Length: 445
Image (cartoon, rainbow, N blue to C red; front, side):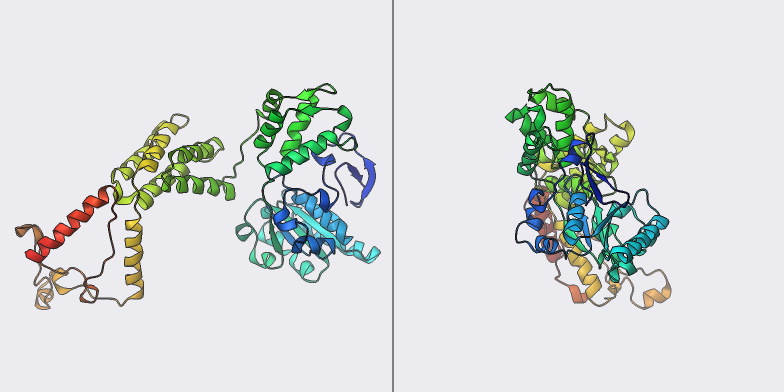
C-alpha cells in the first residue's frame, strides 16, 4: 500500500522511506481501518463492508462522496487487506490507451507473483462510456478489482453496465467530532504530524476550524498546516490565525453536479415551508458559491406557480419581475430583487391546489376514455356541422342575467367531477366563494 508519507517504489508499492516534505494531510493518512474516521454508518465495527474488507473480499466498489472524506485512503486500505497491487489512475489525465496499459500491467503482475491488482480511478465520473466499458470484461473475469471515486451521483455519472458490477458505497462529509479528532491527532503525532512543534490550539479556534472545514478532512489539515507555518514552536493557535488561513477558501459548488441541485432544492423547500431566514440563506449561499443566478430565479418562478399558486396571484408577478430585473441589472445588484422575491414568496400563503388539479385532470385524460366534445360546445363552422347539431343548445354567458349559463361543459361521462379544489389560505378562500356563487347562479339561471 502506497501510504502518504512514504515513497512508492517503481511498481507502486511502498518503499517505506518517509517523505519529509509531504503535506500534512498526506502524512496523516490513516494506516489502518481503526484510524479511519467519520464513516461508521458503512465502516463501523461489525458492518458488512468492514467485515468484507478485513477478510479481503470487498470486491469492486464505487466510493461516492464529497472531497476530503477518505475515498483514496479507503481504496488503499482495501488493497492492503486483500494483498493486492495498488494502481492509481486519474480519470482527468488518463485515456483509453492508459486504461489498456493498466489492464495489461495487472495481467503481467498476476503472472509474476499471483497477486491481483486493485485499480483505483479517481474522479471516475469523468471517464466516457468507452473508457468505463474498457474495464468491464476484466472486472467480470476477476482479473482486477476496480474501485472508483466520484463526487457525482453514480446513477447519473456511471454507465449502467459498470454500475451493475460495482457496489456503491456512499460516504458522508466528516462529522465535526471526527474532524476535531483528526486535528488533535495531527498536533500530537510526533512521527507524522506536528507533535515535535509542541503547538496547541484554543478551543474556540478549533471549533472555528472544524466549522470552516465543512466536513473535509484534507481541508482541515491544510488549514492547520498553514497556521503552523505562521507559528513558532510551542505557540498556541488562535481564532484570528484560523480565519486568516481560511480567508481564501472557495465555497463548494459544482455547476452540473449534486451540490448544485442540492442547494437549489434547499432553497425551494425552504420557500415552500415559509421559512424566510432559510430561504435567504440558501439563495445567497448558492449565488456566492458560483451558481448561475438565473437558475435561482427560475426556481423562484417555479415556487410561485407550484407552491404559492392562487393563494397569492401576485407571487408570480413578483417572481417573474425579479427574473427580469436580474437580467437587466446583472450581479451584484441583481441579488436585491432575487432576495426580495424570496422573502415575498416565503412569507406568502401556500397552496398546491393547482398542482393537484393538473394531476387529477391528467389522470382523467390518460386513464379514461376519449370522451367526445359535447355537441353544444363545438363550432358550427359549416352547414354540415350545423346539420349535425354542432352549437345547438349553447348558451352565451353574457346574454344571461346572472352572467353564467345553465349549461354543462364537461363530457356527460365526467359530469360532477371535481379537479380543482381551492384551499382556505389567502386569495383561494375568495376563489372558493366565487366558485360557489357561480355554481349557485348556474343552477338558478
